[in-house]
Amino acid sequence: MSKSPAPVDVFAISIATAGGAGFAPIAPGTWGTAVAVPLAFLLAGVPLWIFGAVTAAVILVGIWAAGRADAFWGTHDSGRIVIDEVAGYFVTVALVDRSQWWILIVGFFVFRAFDIVKPPPVRAIDKRMDNAAGVVLDDVAAGIQGAVVMLALDYFGAFDALISRL
Image 1 (spheres, rainbow, N blue to C red):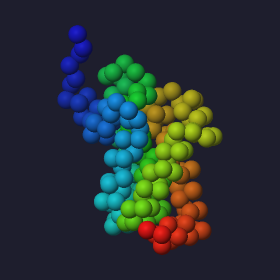
Image 2: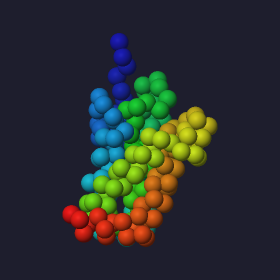
Image 3: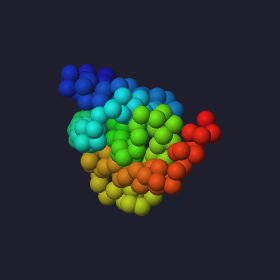
Image 4: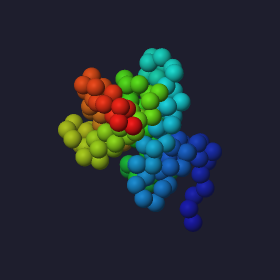
């Protein structure tokens, strides 16, 4: 018999799974990132400092929710936890034009590549931080790497070239 979740657990699990995206049977991390794309688009008109504050809140609340959900499930870094993908994706697209859907789609693929491959120091964070902070912060590190790529693509005109072909 499984234990019944307390209301705070239900709340934490809904956050940790990005509204249930983490329960996708295939590629839950990809689905979690997909949840973040329209959210980033909805926040396109806000100043960078507000988007940064929202991103920081997602990171902090995500750490709490990931810890609470893992404790409830008796796991560590359950695949169902995808709020870390939301946080990492927000970091990836923070400094580019979020009002352009094609830029957000490029950001989706850039972030997913870094999240899946986990180049240094992402993998080190994932391995060394054996707690809820590590669950989220490795994706934030992947998001920082993604942001560097996104800024480079923007700087070298790749987004302008892409839109001219659409």
